Image (tube, rainbow, N blue to C red; front, side, top):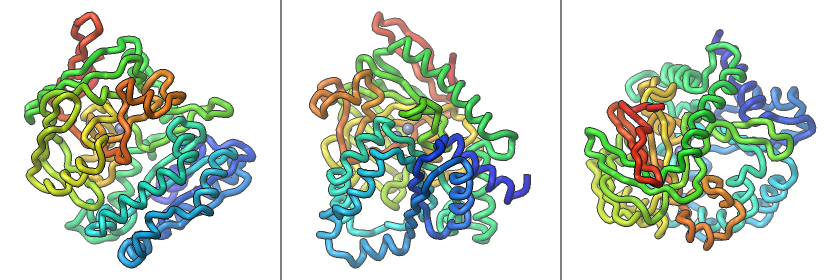
Length: 411
Ligand code: ZN
Ligand code: ZN
């Protein structure tokens, strides 16, 4: 396949597997202006697949940055009503949402954190309907990535920028199985394999997981009762056909109990949080809460994350990913969570996914918390998986089952 053919195949994959666009459905596409040529491939495929209307929202790092630098904080504190109306209405009106990322990982480095926080808080309130439907898969959505110059030169700082962009494109293609045949079919097979894993885990209903590796991780996490492992494909709320909220995705994940985490967790990959890297860090948990932490680099940034709100010091997601996943095999740090979280086992500090608990989507926030779910404005994944990671599960009867051995599935 030539480079242009791969790009077209990728656009087709996003439309036909990522979102499984139906005839007559609307598509809302958020995309960096810099990769408009790729967006046009997607838009064409969407219309060919039967989309009735493609609504495009262009984004740009420099313009976003200008707003943080020059607009007053009140602008971030007050989410515009018209903008909320647009998304909340479309979300309830059979629209599929696609977001293409590719931003400079350091685009917002050094901007006023209060403005970021105020913006997130206002959006959380104004877009409540949209977020609720998104988190419960009430509409189809997909997040994927396309290389920008700024992103590629951060990933490959030592080579010419055009060369960096092509190398990052090839790496992205590798992670989403482009160039290996019919990519839509490959994704359906991949989804079936992930389903096999989470079905077994769901039947086990493990009480807790114990993590151990040579980095120094020695950690136990409790899972909520009636937890649900999920991963791979989700179902179209209308016709039940599969779609993928993330591409790539290699994880199966569930809900940790917000008050049940004990011991030391060591990071295995750097974490890029709001434009700054946190490297070689460890978190010490007691009764589910981070009570101590350290980092070789970016300790202040880690502090900022942990002090975001009460829920930022508790876990909201527990995810299993083999150390040799197609993302990990690229052998690079993508500096983008969409990829890096699919290179290794990870946890998230902050908000949980209510779909990870049976009956969770119907629960109020209070009920979710009472069941062990975590609520936060943050949801930040950090990677802990290594080649030598061992994960042992403990059943309700106290029996041990090996979940991960030598960094990968043991069953
Ligand atoms: Zn995850
Ligand atoms: Zn996550």
